Length: 201
Image 1 (cartoon, rainbow, N blue to C red):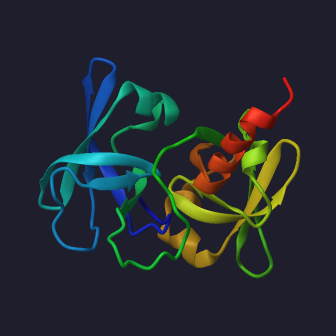
Image 2 (tube, rainbow, N blue to C red; image 1 turned 90 degrees about the vertical axis):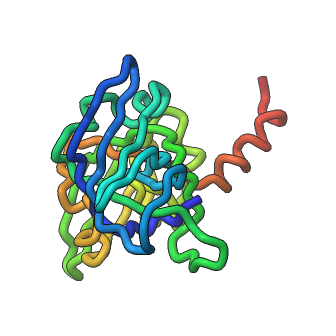
């Protein structure tokens, strides 16, 4: 479990293909002491398991399912910067929202606008079937960053990113046309699932 509060920006330094999967090496400066084999780290919002660690780098495997959800091999290239967050410990502050690290879809950035107060408004496309899971003032995780929806319409939604968040994450490098990983609020997913038996057929 994560919060969507990015703890550091890492860098993909090595990519190794394994049949339909990948093994990646991530260089990092994450706080909290040494990593451990088997611990979970959110990499651009995707929960991955540390399989090996050494100095300031760790390895993790991406299964075919993970690759499909997260943009395929084209997204995971050596040199790419990625948002990183270690899993929550019991008693940690929950400053963002509950994030599982289970990517639901990709969302395309449609518009970027700098606002007078220095923040940045970003508009993203709503993936197919995702509208009921997105509500104004609700939470969403984009590339692992916990954000609040400021607006939603039929086919898109907007978030307002403060300068501190933009500087501390890879969202500052996103350009119109880029895809980001999206995880809906888990509470919304359970609510929608609970209503399924009552929907007209």
